[in-house]
Image (cartoon, rainbow, N blue to C red; front, side, top):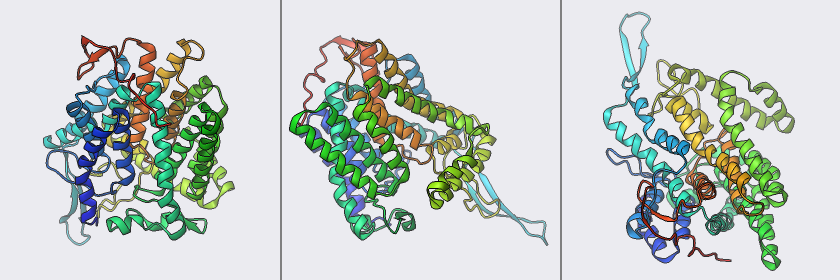
Length: 487
């Protein structure tokens, strides 16, 4: 159980956010409010308030960033993007959960029938979704989108995208210190600070050593964050010169060494595949690679549903690398098959929350399947409607940026947009295996979308936007003009 300090940290984060927004430029305040909250706040600890979603390390920084941006600094945050297709996806993401709630009012009962008696005993049940759950689910969807909307407006210029990459790199360099401590002495920092261990300790042991987790939900999350920071460092080094480039190359090399020590095969594979692309490939090829990866991620569930994914061949390939990895991959595929069968019972709108999408024992209610990939969680919870909305919002920025880059003059595209798009695409691929969708992912998606819209609609932010994106009064866009860099 989390100790008092864990809840005190959650309570103190609004004050920390206020200090950030008062002392830093807007772009940096948004970045550090969300990134530092993700890295430092306690996992699993949350405030269970009535009629609203649970407030945890993901929700509190996002809400505070929105509130302080809109009401303290009076910087409007448009809630609807300019592109009509993305507008539809945003509305579908927020309000598409309504039919999910309305079609899941029945409780799920677990019954035991005695052999010698016709009496049926009710052993347990999962509650049905009620009208009061409707508001909570819709509000939660809106909170999830806050980093996306903030980044679209304020982290989508060339300078702001550099700040985003720089923040990822600096945060990872700082986080490497507790990570190296855990690699050497075992994952104990969350226990020392917040009084509990947040996951299965056996999963933190690999190759005769330890994988770091610090304050994140799982060691895989930390390794993926290090991989993202490595790509950010490579992108920054590519555009730097002189001594600054040397320092950035050294930072990238150091982050790669830390990533190797994190002992995550998937994140290491992403790094080996994408770092040379970010460092050497032309920007247009980077955008094409990102779009291709995004399409693969979107199309995988469709292929999986019709049995066109060669799972046995993939497991055989994994066994050539490591029997342990092959067993883990096969376990994931077996769970996916069970969860897909469960999701097929409510294909369009899903089963809703409370763990209703999981496969359970008919008598005891014991969970028999564990969902790993984000896609299968969304598909089982919100059905095809929810899946299309979420994956569409993540993939649409990649498609729009590729389209906008084709129309833009040669050499005019931001050198930072493509690396951010690659980080986003890598996350989408990883979401097929893990639930690694975090606020930083939504910030990357929003930044890519906002930049693509700036290319497609040059007058997009030349007028002061209203709350829902409508133009009110002619006013120069000073947000981009005042952006600064720390290097």
